[in-house]
Length: 282
Ligand SMILES: C[S@@+](CC[C@H](N)C(=O)[O-])C[C@H]1O[C@@H](n2cnc3c(N)ncnc32)[C@H](O)[C@@H]1O
Image (cartoon, rainbow, N blue to C red; front, top):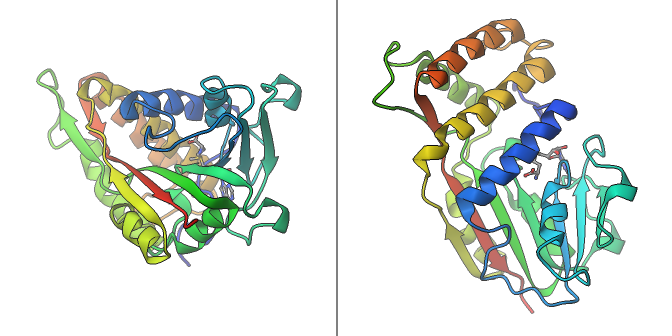
């Protein structure tokens, strides 16, 4: 059986995960320069959805940048990380939805914009088609999707001039095992580059890919976030199911402590962002 099972979210959904995701949110916005791509028009009475919303940070932050007449709805398979409903802005709602299942009738054709971010860990065999269809099902005719992902398969270690520890870094060596782990789980990220073509193949228009430049000064942030996610994965998956490439949970946690030292000394991780925007037929 593949190390990561079909439909399995490999990371935790607790308080620590919430803090990491919220930190990640601010970093992603800094890297992209926007929450919603400027080519996507949003009218004052628009309805916007965010799928696999996690802590709801995207709907909450976005609601502060648009008139309060714009309704922003977040959906996730679990409400573990949602803030209490009575703490949400008046134009934000959060509710549960499994995007790997067919969309309930009442949500079909309801939204002007549907966003999804960081869902790649659930896309097997380079096939985002089912999820894409579901997002499009939620759109009104002429509505837009925005799909944001970081390529966690093709991460690279960069050493700054001040780095003096072993080279290649143990972090770099770990990335080889990480890729094998993803390979054996059929979690390849090649589809990020072809997503606009997949959108066109189902009849969408204005399908474009945007790849923001990497900001070297944020490499520590990128590294801290990735190491945090790996650590959560050791508790969620490896403690129960040690892996031939990543070892046991405690073995990987010990390695992560070493990676943190390398990062402290001036090594960092680069990973590319891919933003696909596309429009549904009218
Ligand atoms: C990496 S987090 C991303 C959270 C958020 N999009 C962000 O960028 O901050 C992935 C989210 O997908 C959710 N998820 C996992 N499986 C799901 C499913 N089948 N349907 C909807 N959400 C799912 C997880 O609960 C988690 O909150």
